[in-house]
Image (cartoon, rainbow, N blue to C red; front, side, top):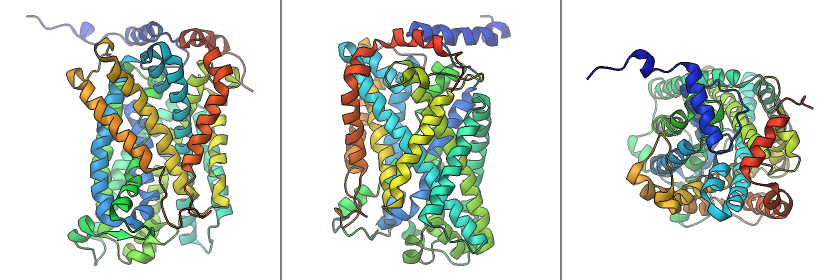
Length: 510
């Protein structure tokens, strides 16, 4: 048998782009966004949003009090395995529907006669989760930035200065997102290398430089509970928040699929690769940090526990250098999260599902949904405002991210399971394993959502300890119900809205 020629094996770029656009039109979407992202770039944005140097670090102190090392390390391993199942289920559906709308579009297509209602709920949950992700990531970056400045000067961070730093970071991310997907792609590529090199550097320094370390038994078995709850099972369960929060945001590969070459394969691969690489690197990072702990109680109670661990184990100079590594990674993470959330706002508006949809779906000359970027940034700032009154509000913002976004992952996976053999897979498929993996994934999401709605510390009903994440979830669901008659049921199907949206793509941005 003769081998195919190089021309037939590697079609011209134009033919590949045409294939992507033809697929979009077949599933009812008019191409609007510029397709300039490679498969590696698509993986990079999800890897950047998962960002172990953001999620693990910002909630490290939380984990030290809710089960301690034993729950942190084993919880990471267990949750990572379960999240990989969710990622596999989501990847399969993404291959069939590689659009910027991602989850809510999948839900509409797979929901049958109630597709519009499934899409509506999925979209609002996804939007809540993505906005919570920006808030959690960038506010964490602001806290670490304040800690770094404090090490280098007499500056003492306050809740007001932290909010100010947070606002500057949000503005930076908004501006960088306005220059087109190629800029986002470049930062995400750098982010992958920075995260992997950063984790390697931090773990190596913490193992090699200090003269004193904890035992291996301490890292894997030591249990700590400072929550005020007396049930070790309950505390261990809510301690999974560290891993649950970090393993979020990999739907970014789906949201950026309309800007990715050969998205039906590249986007699913991007999701899976981002999860398993983060899983391995995160375990190394957590173990290295715990191995270097010197004064557990003091470091766990510090405003930024990783900064205290660095400083106690390595001294001020090393601590400043490693904090800078973490902050740059967090900034890359927040930039990617802003890009993902803005595409969600754009696609949801293109579907006619938001008040003022005509405004939010407009694009600038770089084919960037600029108004959607600004909306995402402003909403993220508002989500962080309770931190001025409630010192534990950050944990609630983190929980908002999880209880919004993970149910949104589960809905299209469940609808694919329910569809059975009537589901038409894309180029990337799980085959006969699709249904059992989907059932396992949805089961974990249901458990996880309940866990992170629970009180996180005692006294659970006090203003400073109350977990207001369930309140935010209920508020968004009530808002979605209130808007349903006008922008949900009456907005028309996705195909009509998508085709109509093309009329707005060249209107000057306000």
